[in-house]
Image 1 (tube, one colour):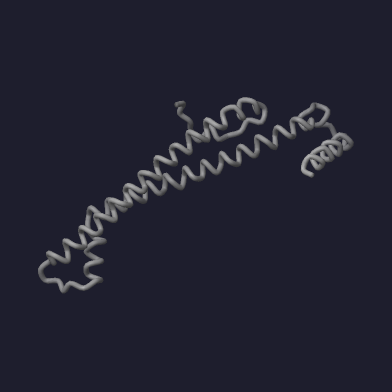
Image 2: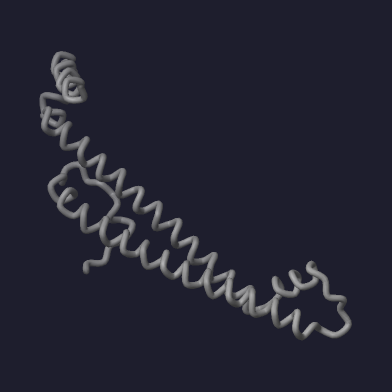
Length: 151
């Protein structure tokens, strides 16, 4: 599978054929990455949940000397556990990747829509050379065609 980067999200309106042909590959690539990250996030969440239970049970069964064991003390000891801190840190890093990939997938949805719009503009002659003149008649004609298409 081809590797893509964030730069591949950019849209070149002068190469619509290339943009349209690579859109599905881009989408598949980034949704696959998102799926991998979500699976990893679920895995780490499960490990964290198991470790929280293990540490809490360990504290309840073997309370530290000199401490009166209350729910708040147990909670504080659990939160302060180094393994739990590390798992939470890893989970937060994975969540960040998840949010970034969700943003990329949303951008790809927008790109797909923009490709459609640009193709419609091309079809109605928006990019014709005479279109860039100050001739309001041509502009009005294009607007009528676009409005008719929306109905």
